Length: 131
Length: 376
Image 1 (tube, helix red, strand yellow):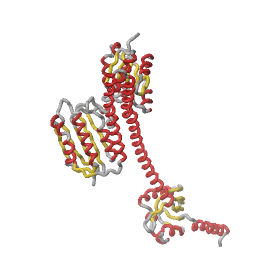
Image 2 (tube, each protein chain N blue to C red; image 1 turned 60 degrees about the horizontal axis):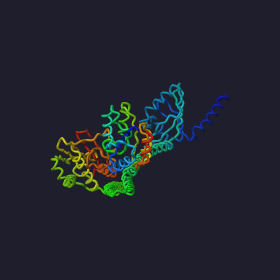
Image 3 (spheres, rainbow over the protein chains, first blue to last red; image 1 turned 60 degrees about the vertical axis):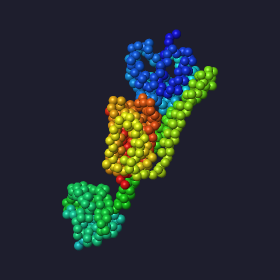
């Protein structure tokens, strides 16, 4: 079985703590990396563009973050996507239940789905299994 | 001896005269030299001049100065045999007021005679003018109402976002923590989880208070403006920052010469100064000592307060649209909490003022607050 690396892009410490726990409990993920905002994630992707073995299979992306929010990250990601040597599945994972956010997210082709927080262990398993 | 034909013609003439004299309109025969030859009695009745007065003066003298050129042009056309239909000009009454006349005329170019019928359309004109004026007013009202509704819509959308995100996020965290505590069988882990609840509750409390305060500001339409001596107000606020100012060796340049007094609610002004000064200090550059320039400038009936720093600056390309929103932070700063500017904007908005920013990354930011109706 191939290894699964997951990136959690979120500035909410409590959420990151609990979600990391839930991900660990699935026993399906080999590496969890946490980024505090969109820019940190973007920089990591840019630096490792030519090393697919370091890039995550899944990104769980929060929307509201300092410095660079989820939307701004997606805008930048779309620009570097063709040069990225790997298919990365991006899920937005936000506490926002605003229909505006959901519609906007669904319109972005790089986004696989919009998950409203909290994200359950079952949902995580489903995401990883559909890879 | 009159021939039958002449008799018949005279009879016809008498018949036509009835139409000329009894018309409800103002009928006249005039010459191209500019004088009335015959007018029907309606002229006297409508304009108030005697028949003698009407004959003595050139008819151009009765016409509104602004309409003389167009009237002369129309007469030139008539002289060539053209017909005038619905030509409109203004005639002066004896009392000095003007009436709108709508003309239908023909001429006999050979003998230089004009045959003209004027209809008094003043009432119609006035109604039209009134409708036009009402339409303009109505349009203005629609524009005003629309922009007020748009502003309210934005506020409502903001509020919806705050509730769906800023309030929901900590709630989700608490719910998740409680779930984990329930299933956890390890005492150490349970205690760790319990310890994580308190900061989330504190955070939730802060967001909630901020939200309640902002709603109160919006609803407090009755709040009175105080006469604020800017220098004193700022000095009071600065007392709270003394430690930081000394520690950072910050330099303050204050100039309220242009507008020393502002009319605004005291507690809002305190909060504006506190937030802007606190931001200027908090987001200082690590490479230079802070210089903060605070001044007022009079612009017509408004006063613009500016607070300029030489700090980190804000990337407005990235952050402009959310700068004044609740709980938005733009720097990875431990004390950035995203409360200040949202509250400041709410207070300024509530008083009909404006707030905006100019900024260059790593050069500094200048915040401007415009206070309205300061010409007291």
